[in-house]
Length: 128
Image (cartoon, rainbow, N blue to C red; front, side, top):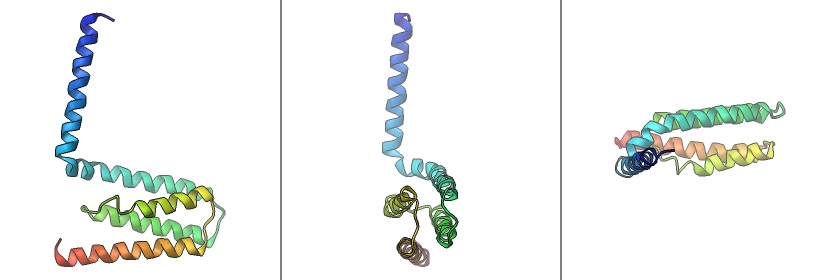
């Protein structure tokens, strides 16, 4: 590689990284709104694939419905903070890793989802 090509590549890479950092620092909300649908769709598809590996139980379909409702809630709410849903996603990940679903898991996830739906409805009602 020639010296000129190497220097040009370093300069170009520095400008590119600097621009990316600037955009993310100053326009973080726009970036998150743009990236959020990809993240949510990825969560949905990955969990569906993992749930297909489970034994056919009554809770598998219930868990699939809970995940579908959560994805719909996140998609419909532009101001939804994905950090709030981290506990929900951690619980889903734990269930998928354990490869076993029971009524306690379903109850915890349902309570979380109902609480988030209620908060969303209140914010919509208040116009926030």
